[in-house]
Image (cartoon, rainbow, N blue to C red; front, top):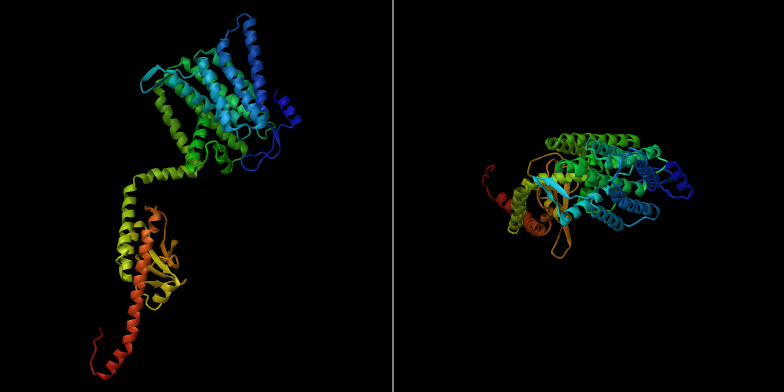
Amino acid sequence: MTRWVRNQAVKWRRLDTPRLGRHHHTAAVPRLGGVAIFLAFAGSAGLSLLAGRVLDGGVTLPIRTILAVLGPGLMIFCLGLYDDLYELKANWKFGIQALAAVLLYANGVGIHRIGIAGYDEPLSMVLGLPLTVFWVLLITNAFNLIDGLDGLAAGSATFSTIIIFAVSLLRDNPLVSFVAIVLAGAMLGFLRYNVNPASIFLGDSGSLFIGFVLSALALVGSQKATTMVAVAIPLIAFGLPIVDVMLAVVRRLLRGKPLFLGDDDHIHHKLLKMGLSQRKAVLVLYAATAGFGFLSLVLLHGDSMIALVLCVVGCGVWVGVQQLHYAEFGELRSFVEHAGQRRRVMVNNLAIHRAAESLKSCGDLERLCQTLTEALAPLGFDGFMLGGSDVGRVLQGNLAPFQATADARFRYDWNGCAPKPEWEMRIELSTGSGEKWGQFFVYGRCLEEPMLFDIHLLNGEFRRGLVEALQRGLARAETAAAEKETRKPYVMEYLKGARISIDAD
């Protein structure tokens, strides 16, 4: 079916044209692969069910339950096909998917009980229906999100479907075994044309349909297992798409972006950015899917293995995410680490407030330098500099306690003579009327430790107090220099007329 659908899509010009950004193919490719999978799946399932009823010794499967799954599945397939052909807004897609999940639940396929922390009682519709809708939406869209590289979504889904098939065999669930192996066969036939370089894409009609059927099979299969195992096996078997969708949600929340806005930071995108080819990236993710599948099979030994398997999965996911180098999660980790340092932030902020108060009473440059040292040195700064024509005019001939720099600035370093600063932060100083008056620089020689204070505190009251203190200090220094120059000739004339001895002091 895949070759025929591909040729028809090319004939009808139903092609996916490459666009800069998230697409990695260079030529237009048909994206109606889901049609081939659906036709193969429906045809094979229908003929098999017919044969089972006609031939002697055939296994009779509950047609009502099959229709309860495939009826809403047909709705999801049509939704994806329409989106492939004409595009559909996200709210419409989620609304139709939610309706299909409601139909599942209404036909007896849903979450009717859950065993967590010793609770194992039937759930009312108030809880069971929302949980069923959430599960179906999660798995359906998870497989849609990983459909970004040739063969990735279909191959990963094939691994997961084979796991579902194996589990259902061991649990003696012929309905799930039948649907799972038919779906796996349809996807394997499609994969021949979908591996890199793909001649046809899965499309939303394929990824949404596959994800929906797998979510429904997990619900049907969970009815013949102990409750904790029933919850854990599908969660781990679908581990790769679930982890990818969780990372996408957290990533977009941290960025402040809409949840339904696509990006190029999915797991497969990150592997490509690390230098892997498409084929190698897909193989790595196949291996991850196989690992999730193996761990889900371990749970068949009973509830006693759940803690160990979840621990292994958690550690593996943590290590894997670290290797992908998401900047958002680095910031989140830093936020958590610094949450315990909030007391130090408060202490440093209070030091800046006290400095702003002290600056109001500073009448000379020495007292100003002492106040700034007490406030800024504990924050991690190594000193400060002053710049501007008014500052230069006064300090040029009266440097103490400053040091002149090559770029006409005046530096005060509380750590003594040190190498040139590696970074600096500038604050523009202006008078009360808004006229620019000079610049104030704080600097440091390393940024190995975070600056634990609210930087906006250097702006308002602190900056106004600094300007006023500098104006008073510079005015006093200028007055003192002028008085010294005025007294000098009189002192010299007196010394010439008087015969006195002067100590070296």
